[in-house]
Amino acid sequence: MAIVSGLDRRIAVVGWGSLIWDPRELPLASSWHPDGPQLPVEFARVSDDGRLTLVLRDGVADAQTLWALMSSGALDEAREQLARRERTVPDLIGSLEKGGPPEGPVASWLAQRQLDAVVWTGLPSNFEERTGEPLGVDVAVRYLEQVSDDTRLAAERYVRRAPPQVRTAIRRGLERRLGWTTAYAQRRPAP
Image 1 (cartoon, rainbow, N blue to C red):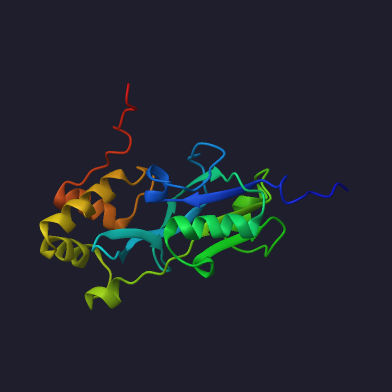
Image 2 (cartoon, helix red, strand yellow):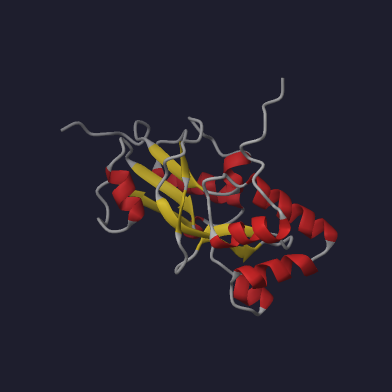
């Protein structure tokens, strides 16, 4: 049995929101692949600037995520790098090594890949705390209709840029009620 050193390990990062179109300083070793694990993702976090952003949320339908290979082969380093990108602490970064707990969609997905580990953002939902109302399409639309013009524009940009396969109930509601359809697939690289 060969021992795999930390530098030889293949670690993936799973994403579903701004990480895809704006990885910033996150050191990636591949482009984004569209076949990440199906995870319960929803526009359920009110960011510091008031936008609704995508986070993992219990009790919502699963959505298709994406994944990319990290440049780092050390799991702790990959977690720290993702935490820096997300401007959070490593405790809010999820991770799993191949052969880890055999339950859940991330473990099942990882078992089917030639990867050694995976990391993902685990920022909590805070919709109810920030708005005082239960999460739902009508409440999310009402919330976005009453924020400032600048916040609404930033929120719209985020929703439109989210990868098209990240289909959530709130996204469908925002498309239907506010016309915020995806722009991700329509973007073209600069000449």
